[in-house]
Amino acid sequence: MPNTPRRTQSLSSAFTGAPNALVDPVAWNSFLETHIKDEDDNREAIEHMFNGGFGQNMELLSLLLTFMRYNTRRLVDYQRVLSEAYQPDFFEPNWKRSSSSVRRRHMLEGLVRSRIVDPEAEADRIYCSELTLDAMDKQQGVPFINLVKRYIAPDVSKLTPDTTLSFPHPLWADEMKREHEKDKNSLRSLMWKFVQLNRDLYLCTFISGTYGSSRKVPRPPPTTLIKPHLADRRTINKQISDTMQRFGHMMDNDTFKQVNRQWKASVNAASRECEYCCKIEEPKDPLKRCQRCLANVQRRVYYCSSECQKKDWLVHKKICGKPLTIETANNISVSAFQERAVPPGYRTRFGPPEAGIIRSPALKNQICYLNHPSNAHVDYILFSPSDKAYHVIIWNDDILRTAFDDARHAAFILDKERFIVRLAQHLIRRGISMTGVKDLTEKDIQDQLQAEFPSCPLSTQLASLDRTTPTGQTALEYERSSVLAVWEVEKANRKRALKKR
Image 1 (cartoon, helix red, strand yellow):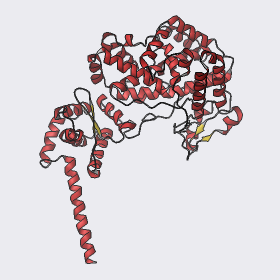
Image 2 (tube, one colour):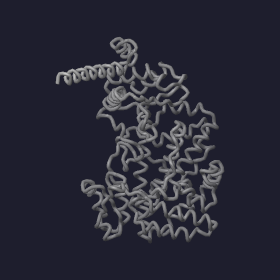
Image 3 (cartoon, one colour):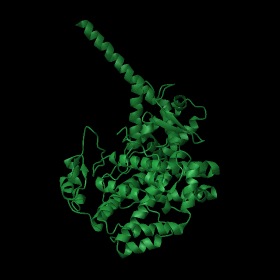
Image 4 (cartoon, helix red, strand yellow):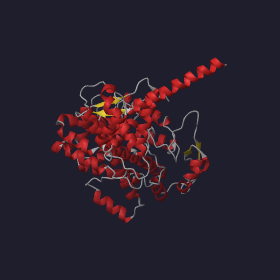
C-alpha cells in the first residue's frame, strides 16, 4: 500500500517522550540508556507484565503466543544470516584496531537500524540493561565481540526454531530456568519465554545492524508493517484502542493522533504470508484462508496452495478451529517451520552447497553480500586490505558474463577446483581494471580468494592454467573468444546457404 503512513515514532518513544531516533540518534540513545540502567525498575516492569491480564484474557494470550511464533521465525532468520556472514578472522582484529569513536558510531547505527526494522521493539530494550555503548566498547570492543559469538551457530543447517541460540540476562537466568523445569507450559514459564525471545531478537537485530554498518551494507528502509500475520485483526485493533486509552494522556494531542493513525494504518497494511512456506501475498495471487479457523474462532491462517496446507497439517491440526490454550499455542509457537535457504529480503541467487561441502567463513561472507538485494547487479565483491569493498561488474558482454556466472556457480555450489581456478584467474588478472581502483593488488585479490577457497592450492593451479591459456587472455576470455569464433563460422555457413538458394 504505497500511501500507507510510515511509522516515524514508536509508541514507546511517544509515551516516554524520547527523542526521535532518526532525527537525533545520540540524544535518543542517551535517553534510553538512562532508563534501562536501573535493573530494579526493569524487573518491576517485567513483574507488572506477568501480573497483568494475560492469564484472564485468552484473546490477549492468543495474541501474545502468535507474536511469539512470528518472532521465533524472525530470530531463526537473523541467526542464520549472522552465522553465514560473520567472518571472525577478518572482523575481530579490525574491530579491535578501530578507534573507540568508530566502534561507537557503528554500534549507535546498529541501534538505529534495529529501531527502523521494528519500531515497537524499542520497548524490548528494557530486557537488555547491559546494552550501552560504554559497556560494549570496553577493552577495545571485546564485549561486543563476545555478544556476537553468543548468536553464531557452528552449523547453520541445524539451526531451527527449536534450537535457536539464546543469551539469558544474568538478572533472571536462574529464575527462568527454575520455572521451565517446574512446568514448561505454565503461564509464568510462558511469560519468561516471551521476555527471553524478545531480548534475543532485539540483540540479534542490534548485532546485525552494527555488523552491517561496519561492512558498509546500506541502511534498511523504514518498515510499514506491524505483525504477526496470523493475529486476529479485531484483537490487534482492540489492543491498540485499549493502549491508546490507557496512555494517551501522556502525549500531546497532535502526537497522539499521529501515532494512533500510523500504527493503525501499518496494521491494516500488514503483509499476509503462507503459513508453511512464508510466501508473501501478491495482489494478483491472493492467499487462501483456513475456513474452519475463520468460521469457528475468527482466526486468520493463510496458505498459498493446497500442497502447503497439507504439509502443515501435522502442526496446524492441533489448533485448527479450536481456541488456543497455553499448551497448544506454546507447542506450535516453535514448530518445525519450512526450511528456507535464504532469509526474507534476500534473493535465492546462491543457495546452500551440495551435501558434504563446507564453505569457509570468507566465502559465506561473499555469498551473503551477493545475495543482498542492493547487490543485484554485482558479479563479485573484492576487499582491499583497508576493508573497503569494491564491486566487480561485467558490463555489456553477455557471453563473458555467462561464462563467469557458470564458473562462479560451480565454485560456490559444487566446489569444483577447475572452476575455482578459472574464476580466480579472471578476478586476479582483471579485477583491478574492472573495479577501477588503485589500492588493490593482484596479491590482495589472490589472498582473498585463497581465504574463500582454502582447499584449492591457487598458486600452483594458477601457474598451470596460465601456461595453457593464450597470452593476454584469461581462460574465461578464451572461452568467450571460442564461442564468438563458432558463432562467426555458423554465421558464414548460413550466408553461404542463403546464396545457394
